[in-house]
Length: 201
Figure (cartoon, rainbow, N blue to C red):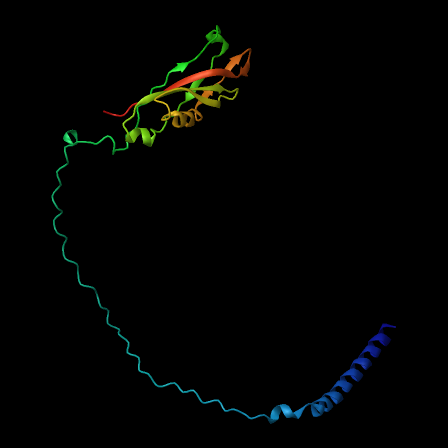
């Protein structure tokens, strides 16, 4: 049965191939010959002129640099102690002192009081620095169960309108060891920190 299928397939392939060979010349003869009747354009020959290439095989070494001159003498250091400094034009770091109103409320140290771990000094406000203004600002906040700062508020600042924003921004970065009572961390309300702003004299 398989031999018959192979024989039938071979005969069919032979017949189809024969028909194709007969039809192809006929199709070529029936093609449109007008396509080749157009005017032919001759393409100019391209010639490359002979060019002589000079090859420089000599190694040209750069001239040896001259020996360096002696280094200039050391300049005298300015006497900083006698230099006059304008405090309004120089960016001076403020001196900050922090005092805590711990507010134990009758609890003993055995209860695990909250303790400051990280305190960040505030940036001296430019407006106050340019005017030579000094002062302080007391910020009150809540120490959370995680030791972070919550709801900081400036409660007493002198002079008013200069140091509130910088003090609150610095207080937000404080970190505390939280208060622990009976093995459980609790929030502490009404914690205060005083920021003192003084320009270097």
